Image (cartoon, rainbow over all chains, first blue to last red):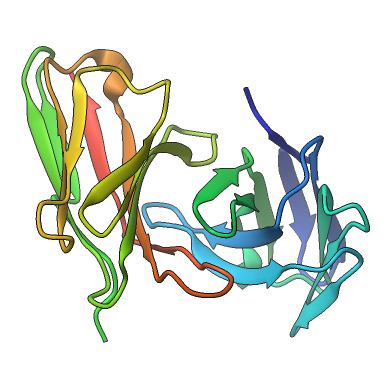
Length: 111
Length: 114
């Protein structure tokens, strides 16, 4: 049973475009994390959002946690080829004892 | 600065053989996780240790899978009588037990069962 859904599954855009990817769940999490994974490597943590309605910015990336702490979005401004990768959201339960990952959004940014 | 280390990076085996993978977490991290990832999917939780204690094991995990963390440092994951469906990337992650936990992943072991 997939507790987290991510959309879109695949996204291919041109360099310089903006994009938003989504992570949705019917469960409430103590926090939610976003990771980026490159081929042949493990995921790397980008951000953790904890409070409902929270917005965090990391350079060109903006992360938002839904008010009910069940969903999140990642917005990338002026995408670059280096942003290419698999973006995974992970719901954190029991304050860090259980991480549940979504299936990911595979982003390709073409030069 | 040493991150999470996994060995081997790649393993090819024949169906029915046993395989063992090793994970060395970041030294001060007391939590260690094993995940499995197949192509096009996110990591799927297998099991989790706090120090040497195995606190949770996925109900999806077959009896052919066993994991240990004997001294609360490195961990091993063994798969007995491998099947073709076991082919996947096996990821290890560690974290420290404080505040909002953050997972630090190794590069994984890619298993191919022929």
